[in-house]
Length: 289
Image (cartoon, rainbow, N blue to C red; front, side, top):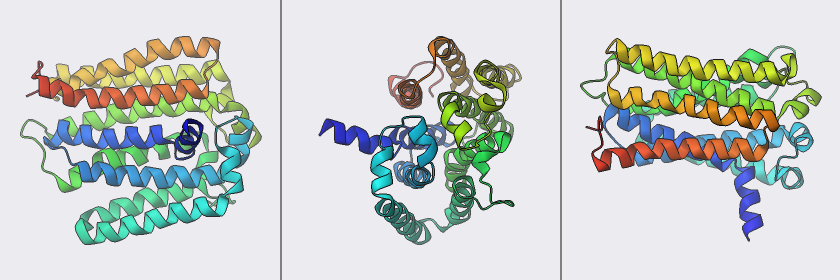
């Protein structure tokens, strides 16, 4: 049973689904002072669909990278597609009934996901095959769900200005880009076989990690400068610690060769850090109010 559950979690990329949902919940609280659990669940369903369909398309590179559950997806390809499109259709029906204002954002998110996974671009290419656009598209998907969904439904806190939103979005965008490159380091061999031109494939593992490290430092710098300029409150500025901590941890991982287990652990750690903000507020720690 444990093996089966672990395989299903890998197939659904549960760690990515959870970090997206916790990101939506946490940034809704940070920017708007609310915890919209239903919205977090909607975000989870959207990332579940995108990741599930991605598993069907990425069989070649996933097999080369020895990603758990790949053989199962290959055997049950039609059933996986049916589940993915079934969840998508049901969730859209609920959105149109309960929160139609989210419909354009969800259309944009899934259009991006389809172009990422399937060869819809000129020359029958996928966004995933294009080095810069691959990671940018994935990070943009997170911005749509983690920030776009809450801000479309909820009012901002009085101390959150448009500049604060902009600085927080830029911080998250840069930090999320570093996650993408770390996953690319793990997937370099399979991506090379599938002609997916990531930074590690184009420039090598060491240069790829330098790019990720630069993005982490840039994310930290954005919030530091924004806080010093009094553009963001402390509860947002304290997030700057996360990319520095990740840089310290991943530097050791890359030296010995980053693995699937490392990437999954980093993602679960990120989800845990996001949820720690809610514990922070409940305990009344500095800056929580």
